[in-house]
Image (cartoon, rainbow, N blue to C red; front, side):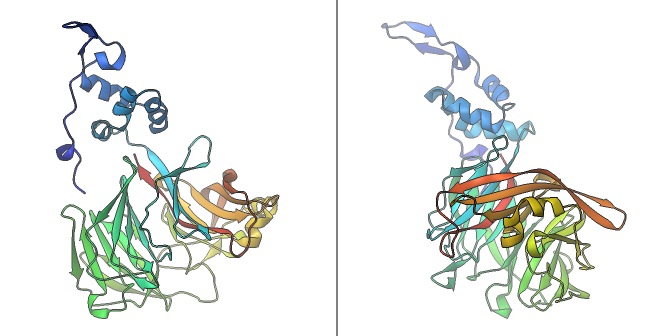
Length: 381
């Protein structure tokens, strides 16, 4: 995916337009009477959601609202906004659906889904600025090498060059504009490969130390991948040092080391049992429970009953976001809570900033009717 400017078609100059009378010209009022650069400069300051409403008022306004030129201006002026995207697998539907979370209404709004997305999960997700990469996964029970990207500005899907190896449940992380993919292929000789975003090419990566199947990984300080394998051994990776064993082994009697990991202000967070949240320091993996969330668990008994289905962060890692299934009045709902985290003494405490239902289905929660959060994360538009 290269820069947009070189691929954008020239747009017609605005100003004088011909009227109905022969040989007559009339001035068009409003945005069309302004120079294009002035229009882009004004609209670049408008929020993404207001632009969507603006584009619905007329065809002329829609032209401005969805133009790639506008994205260039927003990027140039530093006006890109964080938007929260989610992928839900709503069983028994075969293909996952994609949504964007409305920042004011706090409800999931459907967007175009990827028709070729793996229905059996196993895909890895990486967010790079305004793009969400879907890497590998299972198709008919077998790993695939397919790679797709979602353009969060255009809300369109594109296929990218496939990986050299089919992979499922691989670890994927972005460092220095390159996506590193580890494991998921069962082939030790081709265990790792790297995708160069600038050149759109894949290359194998020689890794002398190969952890067993990586269960969790997270990028620390944008330059180091910290990971734990299926045996609980911890490793760190950087492009210069490759994989290095950290010499730590997680305590299998403590939960949390094999579920969603989120890094917030230097701390790792993971779902715990009965709706609890666990925390630890990287390179220590001594998991402890986040304090102060007892009231949330009492108010929402489904959280304690079904547990946290997904854990992620908001923009700039300022809040922790959790999701869980609920079943009020014969309907199936997906609930969420935004949690501010702070350290007091030796403990980490959480404070609920908001909680509520973000998605509802008019049928009960059963083994065949359920919602799985496949992906949740922030991209920029």
